[in-house]
Length: 304
Image (cartoon, rainbow, N blue to C red; front, side, top):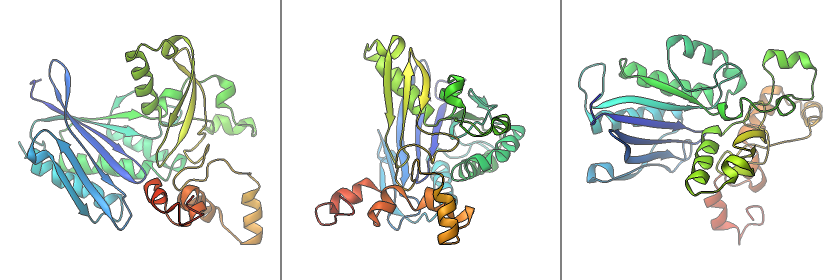
């Protein structure tokens, strides 16, 4: 493989698509990083930062949903790298994807195949808020560049070998054998944090106890002992744990029953509420973006 080959890393989140491009030579060197931010908001943004004028972009864009964001990224890639053929894009050698849920089967990075995509589609009910959009991104790249290798890196892998007591949910055990268990998320972020602790010479990264926190539109914590995860705040889906941008975090389970009887709320409506209308957005009634809330906290007690 040529030292000029590029690797594209993509993190498709709930409200953004982050990406970075690297030179893969004797060492990994980042060429640029970028993001499509505030997907679904009126003031979406496309930003790229790199070492050349062509790799410095800041512009307002219209991306009402993930599909529009994917099209924007694909168009920019073709313009930035050009095509070597109908099946490849410039010097891009591979694309690595952060995949939110690997279910009980996927616990290490693997090359994406049609068989894997089919299995991941079956996992979509585990996380309907993220997996479908991530799979759409993979399929969009595969459609435009069918010969380009794509690698899946699973956010649940970091937590895959937690102690059984941390995996089990206190519901009838038969559901555990159906794959209903605590999986944990943000694993790639936690792996990076441990690597940084090691780089800084902190012994707790390998021989002690440390609490790690991932803070963003999605938020979670993980307890790590001797370099391995032993517990985490998120559970079967990323909705569990602490309050987030639009997700409620942990709630009294009987709230489902209460709202079904007092407001005739369906399971679908409840799921939409706890994933898209709660958290910072629900409490503030203004925005799920901490930057927006900080601007108005002195004038609006709900934001404060």
